[in-house]
Length: 284
Image 1 (cartoon, rainbow, N blue to C red):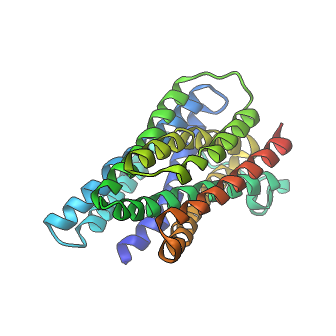
Image 2: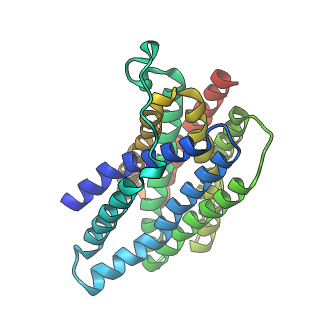
């Protein structure tokens, strides 16, 4: 439990601090989108490699081996980041009119709401894929479905990072929100493991780009002294959403069967759409 608590508590803040460093290095430059894309892709690589590695350690060694290995890697990563003094952002003085938490900003609230909804979709996919595979009599196939979801997001992040779109960020964010919402619908139509894998692959294609644009919008919205806080709110919202999606879809699966859990992702997709539209109206 200590290992899980440590991992859950440190990940959002660590991710935000890394992205804050990227922002300080490439503020106002096209390379910032590429840096955010690289960060998102590496996150997806962790989701591709982490689960099978953790399961393998738990099976070969002892049940706690997976979480303990993750905790050890986290400690090594945090230490390595702290030692990187050359990329450490300078301390920005707080301006008088920027006192208080940045979460009071309506723009940040909308972005965080969207991130909670996106995290909910991830939580649903994580839980329902396992239940769906078990219902199909192929429990081991759940790892394939989850890897396919991460691979789709990873590939999209690489492609998006290499592009130099001339579209304004608010419009890109709107397109990403609409696409994310629409791609939750095929999840209900999956009849077998292959169909579910295709559905989650398509859904994953729009996850990383929308996340990248959201981070870029925070860099534009908040003052430099509040950047780390702003990024932390978004990553925290994503983590909260994963917990909500896992818990709510798990309850539906237990009560009504595996496929019913996908209705939570449909509801979350509607929230993503609404938040994206409202954000576009505020930021355009």
